[in-house]
Every structure is written in C-alpha cells, then in structure tokens.
Image (cartoon, rainbow, N blue to C red; front, side):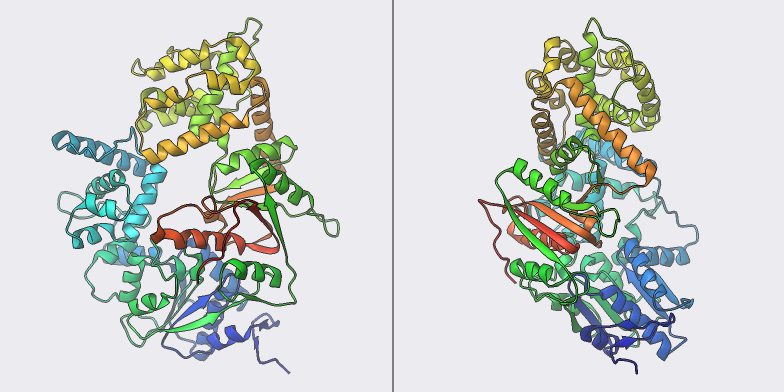
Length: 639
C-alpha cells in the first residue's frame, strides 16, 4: 500500500515528501509564494508541482523560470528524477533568456553581444566620453579612474539595471549626484554607466546591442502593457534574488487571471542588495507586487542536514528551522584569539576529516566574507604541503599589484654578481599579470585593445629569458613607448642587494606605496589595494626573497598537478556568492566577529550581512565549524 506522502515517479521508486511539500503540491491557490528555508527542497517541490499539473492536464502550457542558469540546471535535474521525458510544452529557462527571446520575436535582427573584449572596449569608450564631458563641464565630485575597473563597472551596471536606477532618479527629480549620495552609490560609476547606456543607442535612439541583463531591463522599461504569455502555469524558482526590473516583467507576464503562479524562495538568502527586499516580515510587499491575491506557503523542514545544524541556525536566526532526526550532522563551535590561531584551527579541522570505507576524505570547504582573507589561508595550507582551490576568489599572487611586487622582488636579485640565467620561477601566468601591473601602475592606463594580445607573448619570453624583466622595468622595452614613468621601479631595483635575505624588509624599505600613488583610482579601490598589499607584506615576514618565490612556484605547481590528476584538493575556499546555492559535506566559517563577519554596513543594509552569514551556515550537510572571535561573540539577530 502506497504511503500518503509518496509522490509517484516514472522510475518506479516514489519520492517521499514532507507534510509541507505535500500541501504545496496539492494546493489550488491561483497565486502563491513558497517561503522556504535552506535545504527544504523548494526546487524539488516546484518540479513536483509541474509534473502534477501535467498529469492533471497533459496539454498544459507551463513556463518554469529561474533567476540563474544554475537554477535552470537544478530544476531540469529534479525533473529528470521524476519523469522519463519532459514534454515540449514545459519550458525551463531564465527570465533574461525568456526576455531575449521575446525581443528576438519582435525583431529578428536584434543584436546580442557576449564578447568581453567588445564590451570592455565599450566601457572604456564610455570613460572617454565622460572625460570629454568633464572638459566641457568640470565636476569636482568625480574621481576619474585611469581605466575602467571592469569588475566594479559590471557590478554597478547590473545593479543599476536591476533597480531601474535611471527611472528612479527621474522620479526623484533628476539629480543623479543627490540620488547617489542618498542611496550610498558611487557617483563616478553612475556617470560612466550613463555614458555607457548612451553609447548603446544609435543616432535614432534605437538600441544597438543587448548584453547580459539588458533584455529583462528593456522589457521592464516599457509601458505596462501585458506581455504575450499563453501559459496555464508559471513557476518561478529563486525568487529571493528577484529585483525590481525582474518583478516588473513578471507582473506583466502574469496579467491573465487564468494563468496560475507559484514561486519559491529562501528569503533569508537575499544577499543581492538590488533584490526586492522582503526581509523582516515584509513578504507581503512581494505578494502585493503580483497582479493576483497571493498566498504564502511555508517550507521549514530541511532535508540537507540534521538537527545540530538546524539548532545552530536557530541560535542566531529565529527562523524556526527544522530537520529530521534521521539525518546526521555535527556542529563545532570554536573560539580563536587571533587570525593565526583561527588558521591553525582550520588546519586542525581539515586534519580531523577521516576517510570512510577507504574513500578519500572530502575537502574542507572554507567560506570567507572578505577576498583578502584568502591569502593568509592559502599560504598556510601551502606551507603544510597541501592544496587549496579557490572559487569566486582570486589567487593572491595573480592580483596585478602583488604580481608586480613579485616581479620587482625577483628582478632586484638579478643584480647579484653570481646570478646565472635560468627560467624565472614565476610562471608565465603570473608574469602576464606582472606586466599588466607594471603597465597600469607605471603609466596609469593600459590600452587594452593594443596590448592585451601582446601580454602572453611577452610573459613567455620573460619566463625563458629573465633579463627581459630587468630591461622592461628600467625602460628598455618598446611596450613602454617612452610614455611611462618607471622611475619608482628603477629605484626599487637598485636597493641594497643584501635585502634579498629579508623579503619583508625589502618591501618596507622600498617606496611600495609610491609605486601605486601615481595611478588615480576610486577611494574604495585604493583601500582594497592597500589591504591586499599590506597583507602580502605581513605574509612574507621571516622569509628571504628566494624562499617567497619558491613557495609561490610550488603552490602553482601543486595546483596544476592536482588539476591534471583530477584529485580533490584538501581545502576549497569560496566566497559567499560562489557558495550560495551549493552544499558541501564539511564547511568551516572562520573570522566570525561583529564588524568583520558580519561586516559593518549602513543600517539599511544590515539584513544583507545577516543573510550572508545564514547562507554560509546552511551550506553544510554533515559537519559545520563556526570559528568565532573569543573577545567579540556574535549576538542573535532580530526576526
């Protein structure tokens, strides 16, 4: 006899649902939002709803939307676990792709651009356009960068379009500077964004091209006419990431009262500041945005981990997390005295992961709040002969300012009388970042269209013939074009040779900060650079320059060998953004302290920091380490 909570599948083995999941699958609400907690099976529940609808009405037209491509893949995976074949009238896609197809149906000649080189050239052209505007009408509130920080620009570009920034500025009176000040936005990036958006239009005002994120934005900018959407059921996963532009399109999509809607989201995972905030019992704001009266359906029992993790979550977050007692999980709450002690405890946690049944133990997944914290951990892991893989975070030795310092430290030793030519211990990839850093900080601007293609060739030559590094730094290379002031580099190279025995003393005696001072950059980027450089100076204490270079060469070699063999790393270090949506056997969250993690933010954004910690904690399946500052414990968060 089949149990009442068994959902039949095409594979013979039924799927056992929780009481909450079963209630959602059989709900007849015309419009509903599943308010889920982490690991409660919201994607699986939505997939069951799609299959249930098809079983009741085989010709039902169903649109399944997800916020991300990973969400689309996850939903498709859940569907395949339920049915042998997905019918053609069930469409699974992202809202951005659906919007792109809608634009293509209107105009077959619409152009989409994904080439990062072309997009970077457009952003750089926008910077030049802004420079020309400032020559005609100076604005002392703008801190002009030497070149566009593409990561910062694309982050701002996405956020501006998600939040319908230009429309909101217009509604507020049209003063962009005042709006940026009120909403804590970077005014310089806002002006570059405005110039970039003007470049996307031709002389007739038509859009020349669409890049990622532009399609949803385009439909959201239109008047509120309904969008053609002949669907009987629309499902939307990852609703916690929805922004104003996406919600505007969704509302137009759901104009037909005959179209049922069911969305799902873990709104405690809302870490995108542009997502429509539903924090602190404000879920009704999201429901009110939809065209029909919308019910809220709870999903609170996690299927990812056991009661220990649920209890740890509830200790800081009063969310009522539940978990089955049949699932195993362990939480270790450790205290640390300083960063070195915290890292020692991380190494201890990794060592405690014993293999089961002769299998390779899982890596310890370390989730970090701040990118610069990865450097000391990666260095400590390498010192033990182990390997750490990084996801969503850069390897510190590939940051261009640190690669520049490494190249200078190596070149400084070339003045030794007994120096013998041999390949540079810094590999071509690091040398490529070194050249990029030297050109950027030596000149203050890199003409990417002319020089990017030359960097790999130059790096390969320098690797085999290191004398080229010296000639490059003292101004004997044609790539400098006689335009760059490399005087600070020359001064570094002519410091006393004895300083090779003390890498930290070499960097401290050199005018390190003077290497970067001539390059204009926004204040926030200058602060990040200073943090990274100071962290590196602290990292090399007690080591000679050859020891530092050899350590980094060994790190790269071990990493490459691991990639070649396909073996898992001992540690995997992730940003919170990269960890979101994933789950791991063993998770450690270090450096927990008020003002660090959670980081200090304006009161209006405090919920984002709260939610980042929630995301990090709920990634663990079996083991979770919480490493908390002994002097500054974290207090419980308000509901």
